[in-house]
Amino acid sequence: MKRLIKTCLVKHKRILSLTKSTICTAVILSLAFTANLSALPIIFLDADTPTTGSDLGTMPLVVAPYGTITFVGEIKTTNFDIDFLNAGATGSSFDILGPNDTPAQTAELFFSFDVISIEFVYGGNFGGIEIEARDGLGNVLDSFSQTSTVDGMPAGPIILSGSGIRSLYWRDPVDGQGYAALDNITLIIPEAATILLLALGSLTLLKRR
Image (cartoon, rainbow, N blue to C red; front, side, top):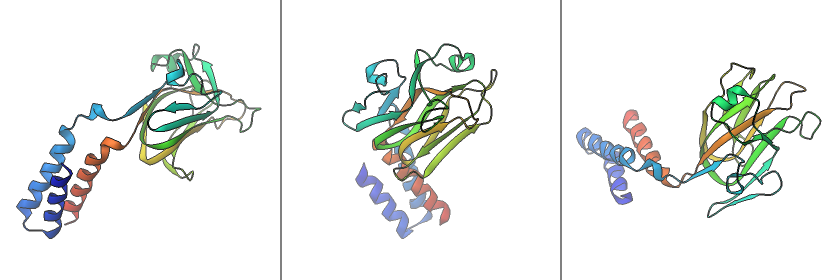
């Protein structure tokens, strides 16, 4: 499959003909979108069991064969935020530290491996929420914010994406509010996404030509 993709890209680069370039691009896109996307490596975190992060408040979670996940924040029971519950949150969730903790009113999940997509639902009561997907240097790759999380406001799901995500950071920007939780966090690992990225790249080249 990789050889076929490489051959198509070489033909496209040499611009043998518009017809051949178009066919090559079509082949690549077909390979990408007919692939079994459900086979993408996925890690699910909901803080309800040891394998889904219930011990992250005290120890790292080892995720073979990729590496480890660590968490700075609190794990709390989800039982009072109606919007959060309606979005699918159950059991426990990943919450920010309190207003008197250090760092105050923030939480962060760290990954020792690359992630390309993170989906989650979020909760809050009186404040707001700001969430950032960051790379290993702390650069923001994607973000989401909502000024108010009071009753009746949306609670997700939200998807943040980027190449080389190494942490998910969030906070409540309103002083004195110690609740801004995430649940049902789904991480997608980039291994099987290579074909799709090549397909999109070739399509961009075709448009530029």
